[in-house]
Length: 126
Image 1 (cartoon, one colour):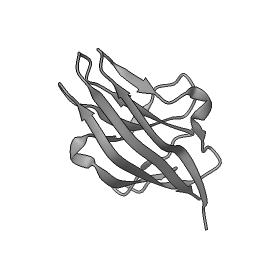
Image 2: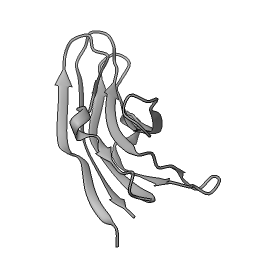
Image 3: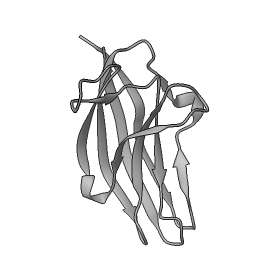
Image 4: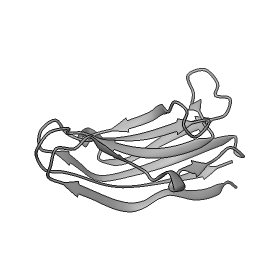
């Protein structure tokens, strides 16, 4: 049996001005360096941008301040539940590499107009 952790409990983000994005607070990034694999569950209840839309990203990096890799990007077409499989040593084509740190980020629409995103992210690690 694996260890279940919450990357983000239910959260709703909203705004109505020009906006580039919101990133999860650094203190809330998950350090998963002691695990070999993960199944990440992203529950996207709503995501909306009046102009060009919003995108929710699940990202990973091996060290704070390093370059983040996008594991999954979700928009309005992905409302519902999405599972992402990550592994420290992924077999070719089966899973993405599990980094030491995981975080979320919401981006867009970048110009005026209403926007919102409602989601939660949890994972089981082994």
